Image (cartoon, rainbow, N blue to C red):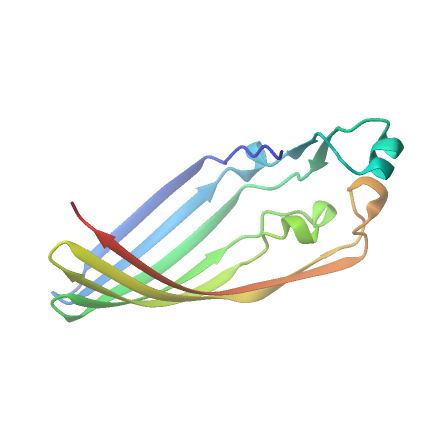
Length: 174
């Protein structure tokens, strides 16, 4: 069991209908990572590996992984262009600060992505909507000189992360 406390956030956004077919939007977000991601509590129970249970002297383990994340801001900008009355093309860009300090960086907590581009098509007719979107998160890199994690297992390591996603969603209004 891993218990996460989701962070608080504050969001401000602005949308402007520039023309009947073009909507422009921007958003600024602050995320309170510092309060929520101080540590990551991990509770393991009912272990079935005899070797590990013997080493621990128990079939359970309670631990807390230090995180010490920092509060961060992110900025987003996008547009929606009406190709037809019921078909819209959307695009956007996002930039966010890395909340993960180098001292607690690991491949398991590598939320280091900073920039993302998105594009998509939306279709709506009567009570049915469908959206197809592609997003590309540019590869980000972070390094860890001296690790604050137990035994320093990730000391002098580099983590690289990038993401691409293709999503399709359909909704029906009742």
